Length: 441
Image (cartoon, rainbow, N blue to C red; front, side):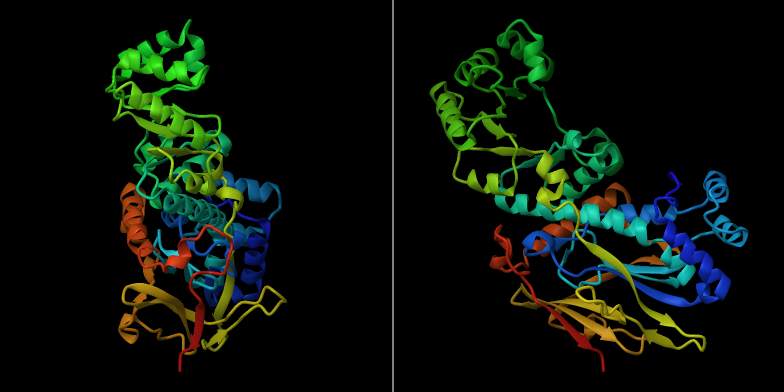
């Protein structure tokens, strides 16, 4: 078991829990749904990320002595609720979109079925993980689309909270980034790591040549040398003089990148270093990457924009009660009706309709009976989107750990191929697919 995640929550989750235990509604079977009403930032699609982290967080949602002592000392809940929490284990069922899957407004990204008391207190931790990771993954997917076949590396750890940086590196890898500078992301999630030297390395030495010679002596001629600490022309010439025409690469971290990249490519070619790659790393986002498409750039390193969701730091998802049992055990559909914040009640099955391999809509079938929901056989021209994640408290191991990350990466690459061409636009616009709700007869 990892660190307890039970206090990564809002206080009102526990006050609702206490009240439900008092009035007897805590045991009512409920269906909670996590979804987004819209795609923030005018994005054409969203990417589900953080599922594997959430499943681990649910397993670690425990109230040990320290957590219970804090709740007691701060008078957060009463003694009966503390006793309930001491034995808390999630025993319900979770279904949802696979990590790496695309989603659209109204997509039932996650469905939690459990007693009210068990399910309600997962709201905050579920939203904090999926909102952050999905925002990063969505931005990173746009950068991956803009980059095309050119490699991308995530290097934004210093621009984020230290644990968020690890999660961001993980999310970026799922949607196409090949490597990260973050070592913890490598250790925990199996993301390939990379890194060579910063400007401080050059400034440490008496000359740029000394710095380059020391780096090549340590890392070999396949390394990448940072050539813009002083004068770029001299930096490139020194790099080739030290490492030879077999130098692996040079990195540019400043200036007008299209102009500088073309200039450096010319210098390298004139020196005979035709195979030396050019990596650029200066304040890139999806728009800057797209602007470099015609430039002689071989790889990109992205920092601030990817770890902050490129201006959209949260996916804006919500976690709502959509169905419950009444005192007689019958299912009741429930929904919020507030202006601009309405939800759709009922248990849902989700499908992506396809025409000749291209996605055409997000089909959401709302069940009235609750005991049965549509399956893939009911929609032969569509792909079922939901999979079991937790069954009666048991997590499907295929979705967690480093193996889960690689499975999500593979899945994302496959489903992104289904997108219509309009989904690849970086400009703000409507969702690429319409969401169609259908009541199950």
